Image 1 (cartoon, rainbow, N blue to C red):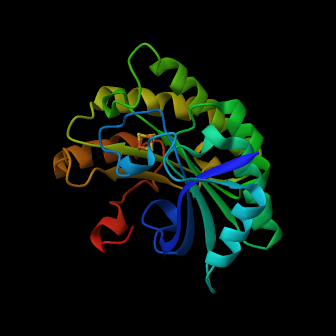
Image 2 (image 1 turned 45 degrees about the horizontal axis):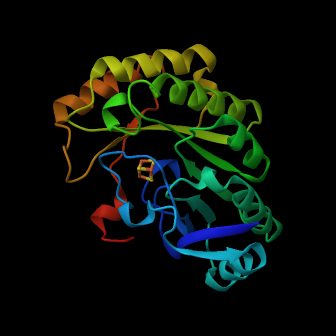
Length: 237
Ligand code: SF4
């Protein structure tokens, strides 16, 4: 088994509930999807990056790990398309005593379940249909898988939070539909955060739109936060 990695680097976590922490990012190469706001376009080709054996990839992690690193993020691209490699590298990181974090579009709950035992922090990202992640025909299947991933992370008692990216194109109705499905299967005590992340530079939502999304989440989860990506502000990767 090999790991196709696009890049590995230390930066400041720019998203979610661990915003601001020093993090080693392991960006896996390849993603077959097409979100219009994707900010890692160079990492989307399945043959981008470089292939490493698991031993080489573990050595790469070790040599890039800086002092005072809070966690290691497995990101992409879409890391779950290389779920076996993610699992091996996550085990290596945990054996070194560092927490692991998975950033995935949660498109496949079986692959998610495979990596889950080696992951400490889980971001469950729900995509609205307007994200253009996937076509309308396949969207219900994506939503079902993402919900299954959420349920599995909660049942495994992982530190789990939800993120939804919103843009000026996001329809309140599709956002609301996702919310209803989420809070049918979990309760507010099960999650450690709910982040509404506005797009930056591309189809940015207005303040009125952000407040509308916030107001939709608040009755279910009053710790909801609107958080833009910090790394776009400080020009970090
Ligand atoms: S799933 Fe992530 S990596 Fe893939 S296109 Fe969407 S934003 Fe980009």
